[in-house]
Length: 541
Image (cartoon, rainbow, N blue to C red):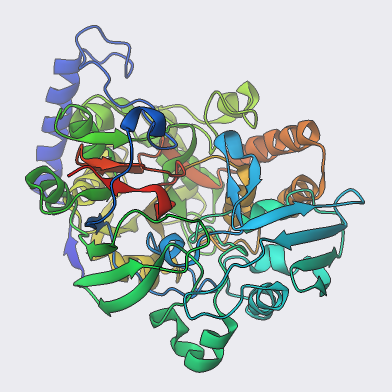
C-alpha cells in the first residue's frame, strides 16, 4: 500500500529542521567541521573476520539472521535480493579483495586464447544435496536457462556464449561470440547482480519446474527445509557438503525484517544474531555499540535517485541537472546521516582504479540559483517541472522523501510523495519502471562488472530509468571484452565520465550496505555487497 503526502506546512517544518541542523554543524563540509560528530562510518572488516584470531570454531547451533526484505525466489534467473542463496548453492567462482576472481566450488577457469574460449573445471566428487552429481552437464543446463530467459539478471553475459560442451564429466568448454576477459567474473557474482555460478540440481529443475524458486536444491553448505513467506526460512546443514568438516552450524533461520528501526532493535535486543543493514542509520549506531560487531567496506557503489528517461520531466537533461543542483547534501548529512554521510559524485569511489577527477569535475555542484534558472528555461519551453517521488515506507526513506520535497519547494518545484512497502516498491515501482523519480541503494561492490553494465547498458537489468546512449553501450562492450586489466580500468574511467556527463543517475551518497552481528558470531566470510559464504560461520556460545 502507498500513502500520499502533499506539499504542505510539513515542508516548512522540514526546512526549519534542516536550517537548525546546519546551524549546529556550522555549515561546514561533511567530515571536515571540527564541531561535527567524529566520523564512525568507515571501512571495518570489509571481507569478514580474522579467522586466526577468532580461535577454534565450535560446531552446532542455529544462526538467526534478519533480512531487510523478503526473498522473492531462489531461482537464479529471477531478479531479486536473496541473502540465503549462497548458503544453498555456493558459487563456482569467488571474488577476492579488489574483485580478483578465484576458484571456489569449481577448481579452475582459464582461457587458452585471450578470452574467446574458456574451460571451467569442476572439483571431483561434489554432489547436490539431493545426492546427484554436480557435473559438466549440470553447469550447461543451468547456463542455458540464463541464455533462454531474457529477463535473467545474468542474460547479458550468457548471450555472449556461442556454444558450450562437456569436454569430459568435469570440464565445460565455452566458446564465445567475441573475446570476453570478464567472463569468469560472471561466475562469481552475488545472486542479485546476476550470476552464472550458482548451480541448481538438474534433477530438481525437472521435478519442480517453475516452482524451483520455492524448492531450491544446490551444492552449498546448507539445504532447504521450509519457508513460510513473510515469517521465516529454515535451512539445515548439508551432510554431504564438499568442504570436509563444514559447515560448523547446524542451521540457519532467515527472518524478513523490512522496517529499518525494527531490524536494528532486533539485533540490539538479541532477537537475532545477525542483520543485513541497508542504510547508514543502522551502520552508524552499530559502529558506536560495543556489544555489536560491524562488517562494512566503502568504495564503489552509492545511494542514488533514478531518473525515468522515458517520462517528463526527466527525459530533459535540464531537469535532471536541476534536481542535482537543488539537493543540499550537507543539509542531508546533518539532518538524516548524523553528519556521517560520505558524498558520492560517481558510481566509483575516489580511490577506485575506475575513477578519475574528470568525472568528479563533470558532476554538477549544489547551486540552487542555477537550478532555478534551469527550471525556468524548462518551463519556458512548455515543460511542467512538478513530479512524483516514490520510495519505501521505511522511516529513513520517508524522511528522505520529505527532504527531497522540501528542497524542491525551495527551487519552485512541487513534489508529491508516494510510499510503498519494500517488496511492492522493488517489484511494482522500480523494476517495473513505474516512476518519474525514485530512490535506490546499490553497493558497495568490488568489481565494475556487472554493476556498470547493469546500470548504464541500454539493456542492463538494473537500468530501471531506461537510460540509453550507443556510445555507452560500445564502451561497456569494450570493457567486458578486453583481457588487459589496465585497459579495462581506462575504459571504465570513460564509462564513469560519460555517465556523469549524461546525468544517467543522481548520486548523492556512498552506499552503506553492512553486516552487523552479535560478538559471539564468528567466521564471517563476505563480499562488501553483504553477500556471505556461510560454511565458515560459527557461534561462540
